[in-house]
Image 1: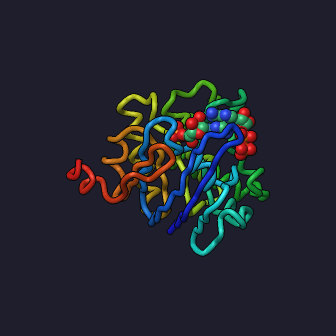
Image 2 (image 1 turned 135 degrees about the vertical axis):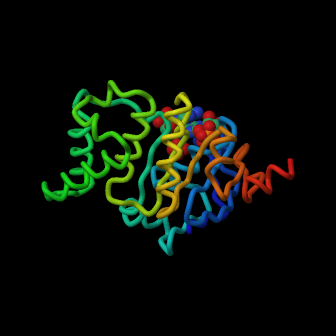
Length: 223
Ligand code: ADP
Ligand code: ADP
């Protein structure tokens, strides 16, 4: 369970991106829905310990996220928005390098992890190709593979399906749903259908504030 209380953020240019966000996010898929500029990425980056908040708290399984960033980073996977610039090395090599940076020092163990993640994301048959030549859907699945290094309990996925064709979107959805069986998976998006199809729990963020929260079926009935 991830708990966010009274979270505020004003950037140095004066933009108030988060205006007191309160949310409880249980295990499983959670949809954070909102239009561009709502504050979704600001919230995701704050949970991912990549930027500070001005006030408020975030706790994950008893850890104080804002004050214990090292501990949370070990348990966190993050697929940022616009993840997509890759060096011209193979998918296998790139994931292998990222695994080394994550602290997987043992070559044998690392090979198992890297091959396992490539298989899990349906990329094993493409492991010798450069990620820079991957399709949009393959890149997003690679993004999930890198986010899963270290077997995180909390996975943050920011605007993942923009620009994917229906088949790749489906494949990506299935991957997220299977991950939601074990982890807290937060899906941030402006696409209503992504949330209504995938997420038993959701919230709507707009102008830095939570407007609605609940399950998509109840919320749709209120509209
Ligand atoms: P903070 O207030 O947390 O110090 P900054 O205002 O210094 O944040 O911005 C952090 C980074 O985000 C800077 O590198 C800045 O160029 C970049 N940035 C600025 N405006 C925007 C924006 N509207 N959207 C995304 N990134 C931005
Ligand atoms: P979303 O992900 O929902 O599109 P963001 O969190 O990116 O929303 O942006 C919320 C608001 O904060 C926007 O007005 C955006 O321009 C502004 N913003 C985002 N990042 C920065 C930054 N680093 N510095 C200054 N302003 C930012």
